[in-house]
View (cartoon, rainbow, N blue to C red):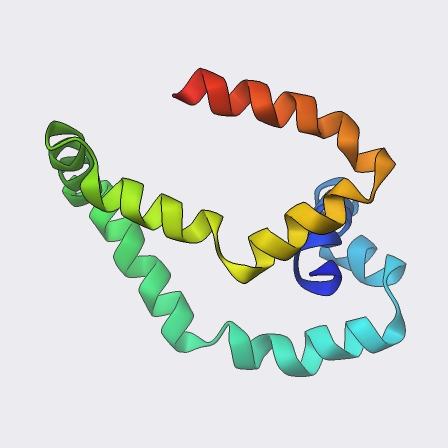
Length: 119
């Protein structure tokens, strides 16, 4: 949980504020080595091709049409996926760990408000 999700904000903030080079400067050499040798194995040509296909669906209206239809039938697929994702192991573990982090509990109030507002 910590390596995959909890530290993500720190990494994204570094990239936002300082770019990739600044982020790499701020992380450990081991993490930077992992970026160099493992990153291309994860984000490869297939991922790039999939991203192009998704962009094409957005640009040609396929994504919007599917979303409109999903809403017209009361979101069965959306709701099923959402429920499943909310019970994913990383979510279950994350909820437990965040409860033990007083510095994160401040955000809990905001999270509750967003959940209520969306429903």
